[in-house]
Image (tube, rainbow over all chains, first blue to last red):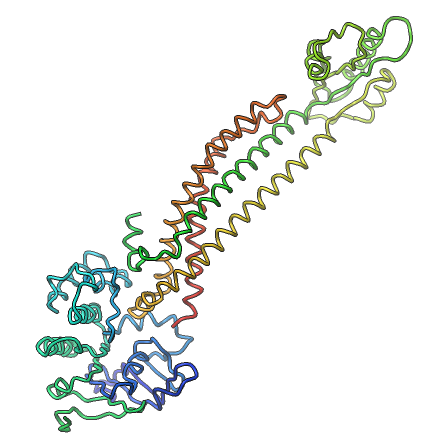
Length: 237
Length: 302
């Protein structure tokens, strides 16, 4: 969208990006936008508009079938595959389907990003327990996902995405399974992170949240993208 | 093993039954490899023993005299033996010459002729055991000529022909042993490779997640390789432990064979250590194969 004031490189840059799965039709077409460091956006659009696909490009689960995608000033292409782990360690993702490992406890699930980075177990435990308390799961530290309710799983997934203080946070319907009180609390957590410099993109259908918080929207419609001002400013309902 | 468990638990291996057969295959392969290696080492020991004990000696055989001269056959033969001994003692490079006694000859012939009295004028060849000084070269053609001149019924047996045949047989057995070992090695590697392919498919969603949260290929490869290594080691250890009593039994039976041909087949402490190292080598091979297989597969993913 815009370069920030200090001319720091954009966190995300899409240039005429297209994405298709196999031989199917293009699900994303001519996507062109950029996210400055420290920005906060809602990603909106109807079901099937391509929100999850757009996020998947940003967390490197897919690569563009055309166009150029750059993350943290690194061109994302096959040649740069070796750099992907480094890039991914700067991205926190809350998946729509949580993607928790059922054989691990909540604590171990949240610890995973730190474990793969080789952080010492003692340090991991301290950070993880603190964050699990923050998301209200201090009593479920040793519970395994199959024994948790949908909202609890979602909070474990959010804690996992935040544990390594990512520079870019991508959340796919992070408030989809929680009540309004928890949703607001979680969003405030994202805002706190954003205040300390994390770039945040939240895909959501929650019109209440979009109205309550004054952040610009990336709107997808039939695979094409539009940047809209915040709902509060534009009066969108 | 506890530290391995801590690392491998990031993937749900406990619920993965796709590679449960791996310890069994490892057990069989290491069992075969242990027996084959023990056999090969024993054959090596025997050939070394034969070589060292025979290389420094030769035998002169004096056939019973057929000349109808004065005196009896035995006297004539013994006279020829004395002449042959004299020729041998004068030859260059001969360290010791000893005529085999009647008792020794009788013992050699016992399996065929039973208890006989060699003084009974039975036409039995006489043997002379000759030790060679390995530092000097013996002129065998000249020695043969001298013997033909003074003891025409004497013949020189330098053991080389049958020793060469024996060594060739031993070399063939050794080669076959290595072929079996190589087959076991390749079978192990291929089995681990396919078990890893299956396991990768089973854990695909979890692997994808680990990738997305920043795990390097090497991290995931290590999870698989550590799991395969511990899994394989258990089976391999059992395979080796099962082979040991069998090796001991076969060794004891070989040592008890008449004639002492296989008497030197027993294994040294170092050779036992080599066999004991097989489970470790097999486990490391499995772990390494799993590491390479996962690395190879992951290269083709995002």
